Length: 310
Image (cartoon, rainbow, N blue to C red):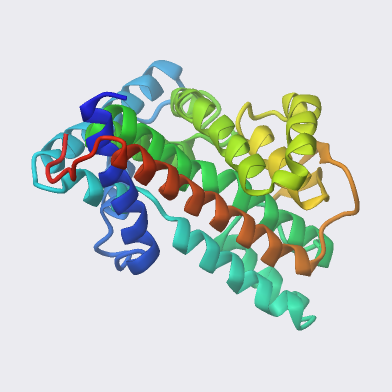
């Protein structure tokens, strides 16, 4: 491992630990929220039912993220700050807990009301198992998007790569979903997100196997068997890995407003129950802890303490 990567590894680990300790800043001050408002203004000027316009939109967003990262990366410890801004593992787990609490007390209406903070599907007809599955799937997919992928990009490309990835992921959430408005305009953002998360999704699956060694063989086998049937090249890997580690089955019929999707079944075993939400939270938390430990081990291999961002 090069000196640059060793230096970065410690700073990326520090950024992950900062997020674990402090969580997210207020929404009105959060840099990602500010970026989102800026890209909403860009969309208002650029939008057309046209892929080329969408490519321009995505290029501007990536450039803005990379430029912000370049500026922040020049500050001592800037890479750690960039990672702390980009990741959201603590918030993800806390939001899952907010859905879990009413589920465990039998408050189905409360769980349905809390679920849209985590997923985009229609919760109105979901039972306890359907809500539990939605939370588990979100923990899997978003642990890639909001924890492992930012860490990976920060390690290989510094603060510019880290915040460029955050820009891509934010744009995908804004315009990358399938709808009449974004089918063409959001195409570039969605494809960029697929490319940016391809390796991190597989790193996540490997870490799932690492932290649940008793299920590692099933994780490998079921990811190989089931993930490719999912419409997303990355969500299928993450969700199948978590399903295999928990011994549960995910996927099936999903409703997004008036749109219904028949997703493939992932994993094997019974459908999730409310108790499985806590198991999934512990699993993704253990994955993040393992990532921090591996980064620190890589940094220690350099036999010196890094103090400046690369």
